[in-house]
Image 1 (cartoon, rainbow, N blue to C red):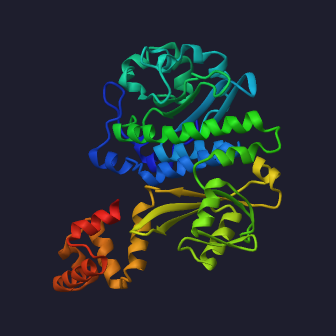
Image 2: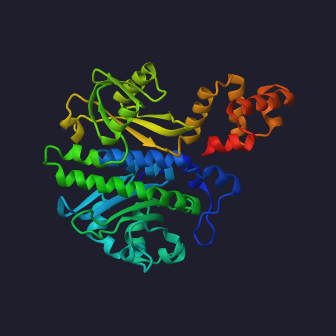
Length: 409
């Protein structure tokens, strides 16, 4: 079995209690816990979206999930796929290369987690669980599945999701996503399960789009039809910003002035000027995915979004359809992960805040008291209170709580 991610590797040395469960010290376990925040979920969802049109990205998605949740291995598979009748669609990360054949050929039929009445064989799409909820360690170690297969390949604890239940046969196959941890690592906790559940809707949409591409891949306009149906603005660009394609939602942004284009070349998006946009395009073209917070002025106030710039791989379906294009640009409106950053930028620009006022506002937005802000900036509390008064005047907020609420919406 491959080595566990560095973020949880030290937990492998923690002792076990009489039941075989991990009993780390409170300090070690606190350090070993992973923080699965909105940013991590957004990154996983974006990679799944990329995989919808570029199948090679599913492995990157599995890698993201394994690192993000601190799993030893990840298995993502479907059976009787529409484009692969009588075959298994399989993606893995950190897994024993022989485990796939053993599981699909024999041990899958004896999987105690799947066979349990609360397991996935009688569940609906979106059902997530941690295996220890209904199969404690004491019972797992008595099963033939664990002793003949699980122990050897390192399947000790599991967090699993029935991503799709195949309620529409021939459209999307039954699909499961399972994360495993080896013996010696702590079980998945309730917070990680909630984050795992939060990932499922976006993953399910990406999976549906993927099978649309698979079914229609032989039709010349299949890709454009799929992109047109997507609610997010999507553009296909060259490295210099030359626009090859924009879906209906992206054209609406051009008409509104959010996306600026001249002579068939995108030069600016929202507050991201031409220089910064060109730098971001260049980084995306060499494989460094860019994620930029946007704020969009409105008649009253502003809204927020996130711009994602991703390199299209040479052998991807999109690259074959647009051979000279290199970059996929997606605007996610109301992106929760970058909401705060975008709103901070908007307030700074629209209200003409000074650098000192911005430093104070960022500290206050993080929950710091005036005294803490003063110490951090090496100024007096009276100076901080003066900055707060100026912030309220410039933003036309009556109370600080109103300003902080505006930043957090």
